[in-house]
Image 1 (spheres, one colour):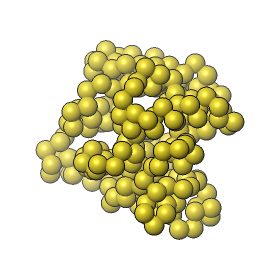
Image 2 (cartoon, rainbow, N blue to C red):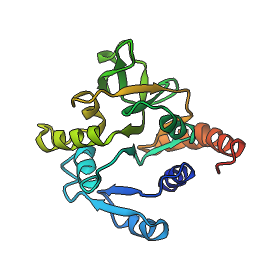
Image 3 (cartoon, rainbow, N blue to C red):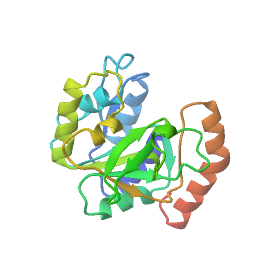
Length: 208
């Protein structure tokens, strides 16, 4: 899945790629050597969340960025949509239909994100669920890193910072083909239902 994302980023001209590592960090060394990646390790990964890993991974970054989760399978059109949209801070949001897990997104009528929750009951009017891909301006990234340094919950997920910092983040809703893969059940679902569609999409657009 990580090589899939590397390919997607390079297809759209993104060549400076940083991976924040935690569990099984040594696995990424061969990838880094093969693709010229930068690795940044979170030594406290077992007691902290992805917000802290993002803070560490981006400590030397002072520009606009794309942030991708490592456990997602998706077609590349989402990245293209983010890059083409002129709004500086965007979070890709897809349909919850058929998904076995997800973080639900609540927005205002203008699309500004005001809440993200794993509990769908807290977000009765959700516009969808997080895909795991976002575009952040230089300013927004700095705010997320500052928030991480003072966050009360050490295990907080980085996406939750998007509605807590000063910069406004907007949902870019899409009918993107995607899924998250956290366990064997999700892997089986992805192999049977998502990968064939992603492969067809990439073949059709000559991005495989």
